[in-house]
Image 1: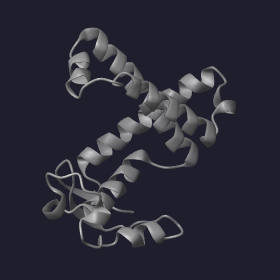
Image 2 (image 1 turned 180 degrees about the vertical axis):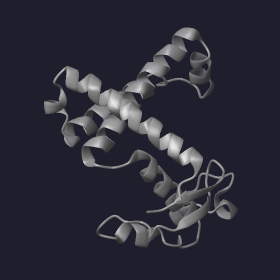
Image 3 (image 1 turned 90 degrees about the horizontal axis):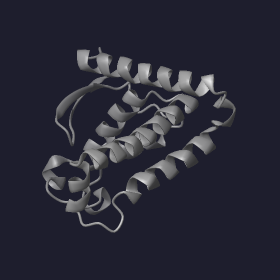
Image 4 (image 1 turned 120 degrees about the vertical axis):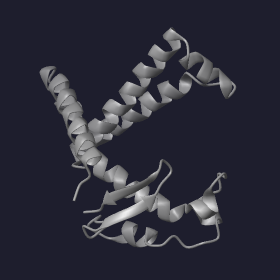
Length: 164
């Protein structure tokens, strides 16, 4: 059972992918969009986003984003990153919304709030074995669930996900 917000989010992501594909296909660029090339392009775009913050203090990028010109630059670079990430997901047959939902569940197991709140310690140093984390990664078919609805306290909020 999908929640209303999940359905809306999935439709919006699928529509974005359709728009990206229409743009790409009108230019006959699909021939160049292998997963390897898209991943390389994604890396370049992430570097361009990071370049906007290079050699700046932690507060300077926020100041830049609050200016009209700076926000436009961030927006454009972030859009490039998102476009290539969505294109890559499409090319390898991964539903981005489902992948994010599964990853948040896995991260919730690796980083329980009781051990990770307020610190940046890697899960392997928290002193506990993440429940189900390795099992989800070890399955050959990549299926991290059984169709169960799972309540997960994540980075963002207490949410319910359906794991297919």
